[in-house]
Image 1 (tube, rainbow, N blue to C red):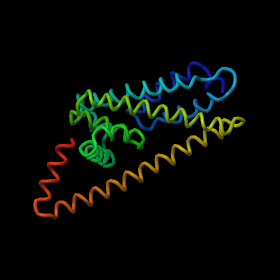
Image 2: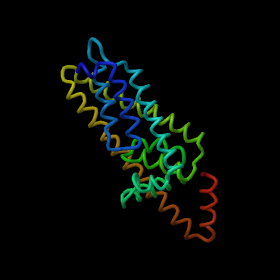
Image 3: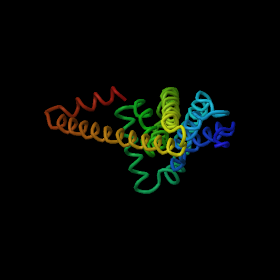
Image 4: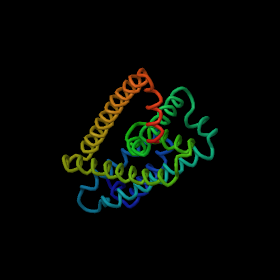
Length: 217
């Protein structure tokens, strides 16, 4: 409790968000939610605004470092960050997301497990415009940090006398939202795949679809 309410909490949140962009096994959302819970406590507690700033700044810098790795060290990224069958599936999925949705998927990818790392790496590999990447990453980082801290604040407000229950409630809600986002993404992807297939079966449909996708990307 004392540690969570100390100035070190901001550094922990910053570093967790920074490293999580490159190593998605780190629980950066858990740190945001936990500190958001303790922000509801009396006495000295973390400032909500500063927690959001620390999380957003760490996420923004981490995503840009990951982008730079993808752009300037692609062999390293493929060998150590997107290695194996699972990593290559993530790369192909991220390539498709960027081609079909561009900046929107840079924002949405931050809420999908492993999505933030794959999207940032692949954006660098395909040389997605730096200015656009940074703009969408700034939006994504701020929205994500606000979302995590406010989830924790909600959990702490709901369970003022039991911070652990507040953290559990925040984490459970975050997990449910992540599952919902993934379900929606899969439904939309399946629908778009059916539309592409239907368009390709029409005379001249394939060329029209390709032209449309080129104009979007």
